[in-house]
Image 1: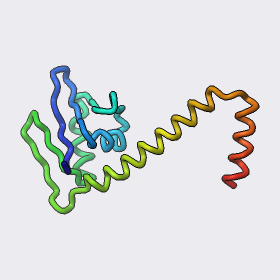
Image 2: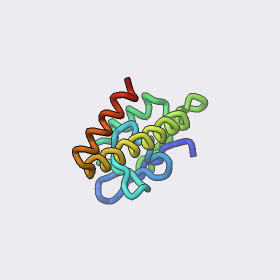
Image 3: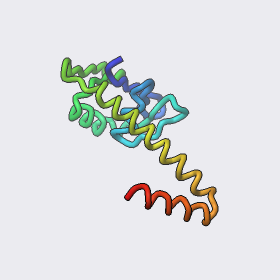
Length: 120
């Protein structure tokens, strides 16, 4: 599937599923829920559509039976690759943060010393 399918829900929200959740998280910082969906309020649809148009990403809005296709200029796959890499990086940073929050001050000082010497 090389497009984002935007599905209207009864609670005044739109949902996106599948790999498209990573694109939505990457472009809009929308939270991924249960590793399966991203939701956003109906008031944000215009912003979402403008951004998808800007990046030439195919999309389908079920409620309005709109299917915007950019043909060979469709950047869905390229943005998806970037989005997945960004998600992996953010997950690693979050894991490091969690470990640091549980570390002793002495351990944190040692880690900082190591990082300062390795990154310079």
